Length: 396
Image (tube, rainbow, N blue to C red):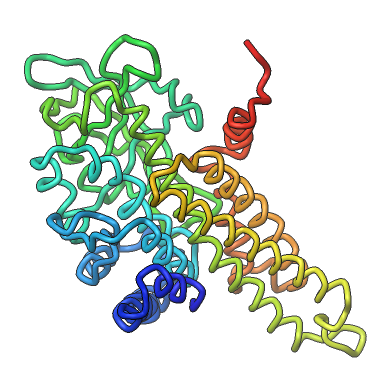
């Protein structure tokens, strides 16, 4: 916890210590009182009450940390969103932090940066306040990490777009009030024919086809959504028409950094709980922890966590200064996904039979964290991005 608090203090300076220390402690208070006591119940039910939890977080200012003050945000830079993301890693599951991240830092950056004042008042402000729930509509059945291949179309007819198609793996999809939708708005080149559109989910023709059953992230609802002649005003386009692909790539950078920050704290918790368990659990007349292979392995994992944190903080520091951190963000996400899988597997092994039950955090982390190497760009896509910046991709 105190790593992110101290980073906030460093960023703001001595005069803001109490205010921003209290800010992070307030996150933990909400987690301890309003979220963690109910996580097991929500995991079993397959959904958490997004409107209720988001309203609590919105009232406390945590859904718009780096968003404009005039629309209900705190007006801070992205480094503070990263610090809050680390604190949200104290939630005892992966699904709820992921859903919060969609609301605060994955579906709204483009709207906050490029959207009209009218759209910000209608969609951004109530999202920051927690009055409405947002989802992000990018992935499709045949276009996950390959965003350029999406098929959903928005055809202009007068002063409206008529939208047809569908979106898959939509976090918050069954509870959302609006969607930040990426759709093809022209027949041009795939990187220049897309737009981001604010789409109310209560419009005629929007169909929630099903709630998807997943192996992890159980408390987060994930939907398949279809659009059948959905009519949306052309003024609901975020920024410039045809720039949606570019805007979404920018959103991805914040999404990836946020995700890395969030999983860091959870990985630390899993290591510490494993230390505690192996210290009291004995085998061959001594604690499991006292076997060199165990305590050396846990030391290696803790070292990897700290190295990843340093990469995250470096990328974030460069990002808030206006630098392109696509390569570093891709590296951080790649490493986070692989480390989470490695850490979850190693720690679960030391729990023995208990690790194969649903009663402990390590088994939930083992299931939930697998998504880190898939969502927001698979490992293979991250490698391709890194290779592009290294100029090592084969020439076409």
